[in-house]
Image (tube, rainbow, N blue to C red; front, side):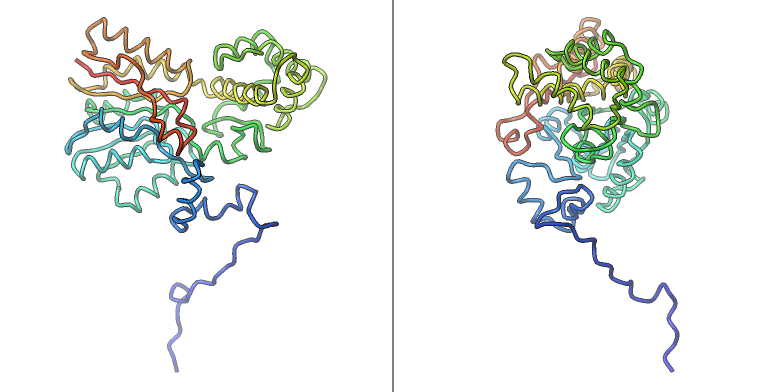
Length: 354
C-alpha cells in the first residue's frame, strides 16, 4: 500500500482568480497582470511603451542623473530616505556590488513589506540592506548607528502604487475614502481635517501647498458644504464640490477644473502628512549625517518642496557646510517624460558636503 502523504507534501489546490465584468479589468483589485508584474513582464512592457505606469507599480525618475551625481562605489554607506517601490534602491544596491551597506526608510506600512519582499527575492537581504519603517526626518537616529553617510537620496514624490490604489484616497480620479495619509495608522485623515477647518485656513493651505489660483472659491465652497451638513468623506464627494464651485467661474475650462482638483488633493495630502515640516527637519539634519565629501540628491515635484531644498542648500553653502550645490535644478529628459508623464514636474537638486 502506498504511504500516506502529509498535508505539506500534497499538491496545492489550484484556485481560479475571480473573473471581472467586460473585456478588461477596471477595478484596481482586478488588475491581476499589473499587480503581479513579475508574472506578466510582456504585458507590463506594452503598458509602459504607451507612456503609462502600470497599476500597482512605480517607475523611478531621473535614475541616470541621480547615479551619475552620487558616484556610488563598493564599500560605501548610503541612505535611501524614501524607499517607495524600491526602484532607486535597487540601482544603488547594484552600484555597491554587495560591499558596504544601504539603509532605507519609509513611513508606509502597507507598501514597505511588499518592497522589502521584492528586493529580497532579487537577493538583497539584511546583509547589505537595512529597511526601517520610520519618517526620514529621523535620519539622525539611523546615523547614530550607521555612522556618517557617503550618499543620500530623497525622492519626495508620492509613489504611483499609492496614487493608483483608490483605497488610499490620493486621487480624485477614483472613488475612495478621503484619507491621503502615507501611514493610514497614524494621524488624521483629510476628511477629518475638513470637518474642523475655517475658510481662511483652507484658503491659505491651498495657496501655500499648491499655488491654487482659485483658492478662495474652493475654500468657501468646501466649508459652506460642511456647514450645511453635506458629507465630504470620499474622493468623489470632494471632486464634485470643487467642480460645482468652478464650473460657473468665467473662462475656467474643464481641464483647469481638473488641475484645481489635483492641486486641492495635493494641498490636503501635504498638510495631513506634515510634509513641509518633515522636509525642513530633514534638511536641517542633513549636514550632521553626511561624511566629509558626502553627496545628497533630492528629487522634488512641486514649488513648495523645491523652494525649501534650494533655500537650505544655499544657506549651508554660504556657511561653508556644503562645498558645492547644483546651480540649477536638473530636469528629466524629454525621452523620459514621454515614457513616464509623472517625470515632467520633477526637479533634482544636489549638494556635496565640505
